Amino acid sequence: MKIDYRQAPLAPADRAMLDFAVKLTRHPKAMAEEDVEGLRRAGFSDTAIHDVVQVAALFNYYNRLADGLGIAMEEDLPS
Image 1 (cartoon, rainbow, N blue to C red):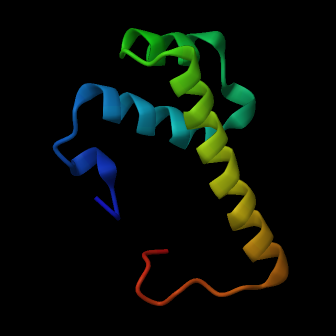
Image 2 (image 1 turned 90 degrees about the vertical axis):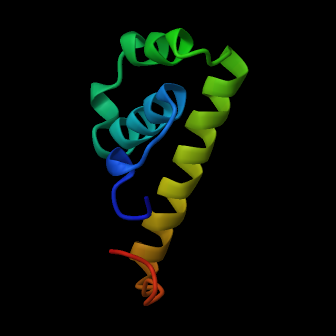
């Protein structure tokens, strides 16, 4: 799963959450109300959706900070 979560046997709600986080990371300007509604249909509360967005945003920030400072990725992590 570290390399491609789409190949892992995940619950539909987990897959919806990860799809949302990937879209937010890769195509943030393409996010729409339908993306949030998709998480609601998957059973996420507004608080849980807020948490998903906060965690994804935080990790995106950390990655950009590390990239901006030239911090190398640990060797045992996939690139």
